[in-house]
Image (cartoon, rainbow, N blue to C red; front, side, top):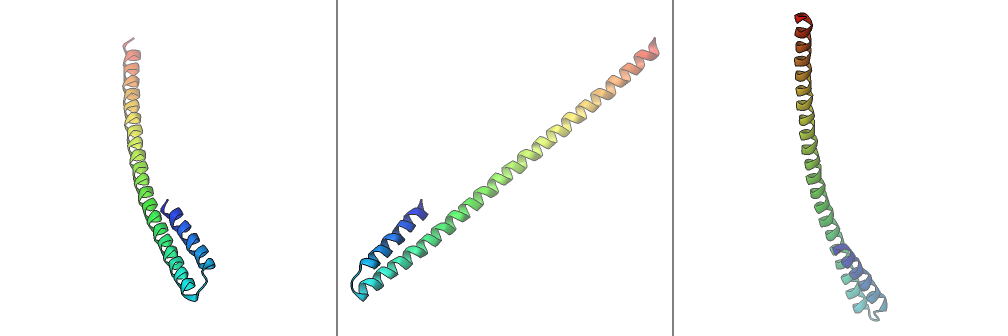
Amino acid sequence: MRIRIAALTAVAALSLGAAACTQAEQDEAQADANAAAANTGEAAQEAGSALKEEAAQVGSAISAGAQEAAQEVDEATDELAAKADQQKAETASDTRGN
């Protein structure tokens, strides 16, 4: 939103500069346009920094979620392996008992 406002300000300043009659008015319009361009650049940089920070936070959340999911899968497979070993032991004792 800030970028859009700054861009509109720059366009308005350039339009005023084109319509200005005297050299002083043209110089003032150019100064306004330069200031608007600087503001646009600063706003874009701030937006980029904010996006970078948010992306880092999202990346951290995804990484933490993936690690938790991997741990849960590991625990589940350990439990299944233990149950399978127990079932094998029960089966082996049943066949020896007959």
